Length: 126
Image (cartoon, rainbow, N blue to C red; front, side, top):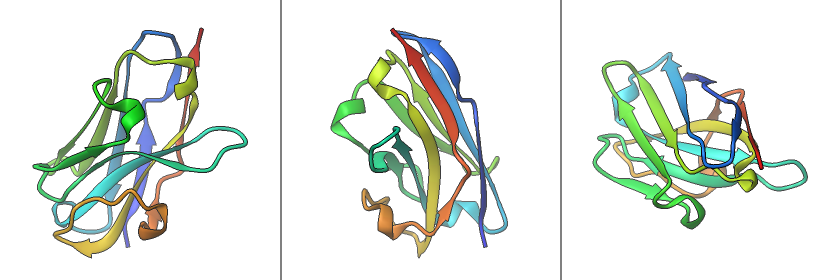
């Protein structure tokens, strides 16, 4: 069983930055891919960024490429999402996720993740 806990959300003006953290516990962190998803009011949950078990391979949704960076610290069992040049349309609840596939790349498919954090609110004002 994996437990995930996000932090770092908040209110920021357009053009600003935030760094989200997702601390994990309950199992070996460095064997599994991690991902960030977000869900805005009235919309479906969508993939934001993913990172494989090693940290060598990352994947980004087109709408965040060049602005967001996902990284992981396997010693700290934490995955991060650095968000720069934030836009009002980035406003959402951001959640980290992982699954039970060993030594795998991340996936953009929400159905492939079975462990989720509680989410952290990011609000970007115009």
